[in-house]
Length: 271
Image 1 (cartoon, rainbow, N blue to C red):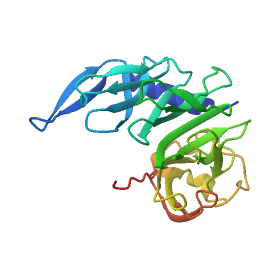
Image 2: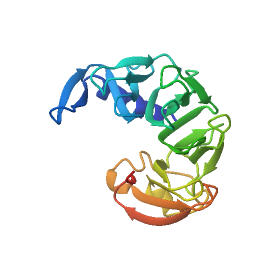
Image 3: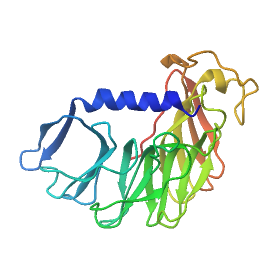
């Protein structure tokens, strides 16, 4: 069985949030925010290439991903993608005024939806898949370190076993290398989630997320000694173990710099 609980959780999230989504854009004249209803729209990330051109990534009507594009500072939005075989898109980032990337979740085994990292080279007008490996993948965070160098944080399942860490490309998305973080073992009851990534350059970066302490207490690196988990292990928030790690070799190896039970950790650096 491949990540059934994870897929179900994502679909439930889409159901609850897409029913009554809300979007807002800033009125640059008055300095206020204008709110507009977006029924059946789920917006998870927004990024602007310049003051007027921006992208919003998420999902539409539970039938696939959604990318909206604006060229008037968010006053109006047009759909530029809603048919790619992906569950949803969780993040979007610009490399320059022409090139952008989007990342999200894909399931190949049952639904043939596995285009989980996309790229646009025409200011967000059209999109192509650049990562579609594995049965299941979920990339929660995307960063363009410098032109051509892109990283995504999340997890991927090539065959019956899920790995956690980064997808790393140094050639503009043509090829990708998966680089595992320290928390890698059977995911069905462990739930290790690297949720946020931020690199200072090609080599030095930080990854944050959480794992269930029931798994983490058994082993810090590698597979736990006891693979058996209680039913619904980690279903309570206090069982999270917040984890932050640093790499100095582009994500090949990681050092844990923070651990604390009770919550899941994210990180966001000022631009």
